[in-house]
Image (cartoon, rainbow, N blue to C red; front, side, top):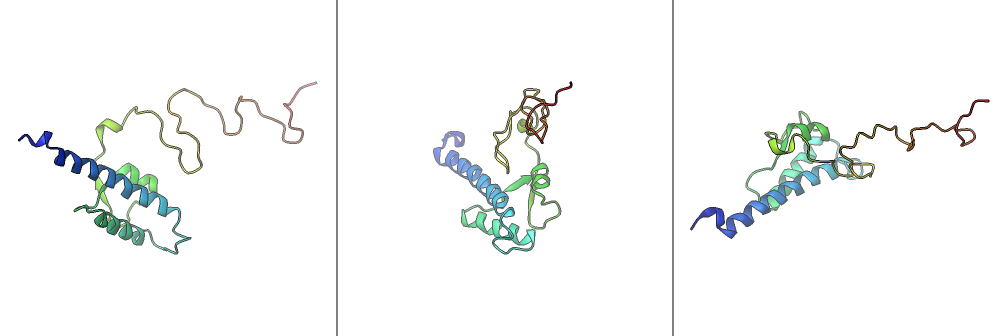
Length: 134
């Protein structure tokens, strides 16, 4: 039997991929909740996340890319596994997710406008009207 067509093998790979995303989501969410849950050190959070990955049945802690570790503010934190960048996700690939403050990703488009100025014109904060000369 060809192992590439074995449904059990395919199911496990899919499960590991989903569990790795859950691990990353766990870290991302609880990084923002550290104060509320009274965690003071990021390495304590990583230890919790690593235990979470074991509870999901993973034999190894999922790896995070160097780029993701930097974005999450986890550079130098012990207990993380750094993996190589995925070449298929380096360039292109559309916009990202909503991010911390909402919004819908975006991606491409050449829309170079400042936040709060949807039509590119500044408004006068005193009157709420556009500045006019004369």
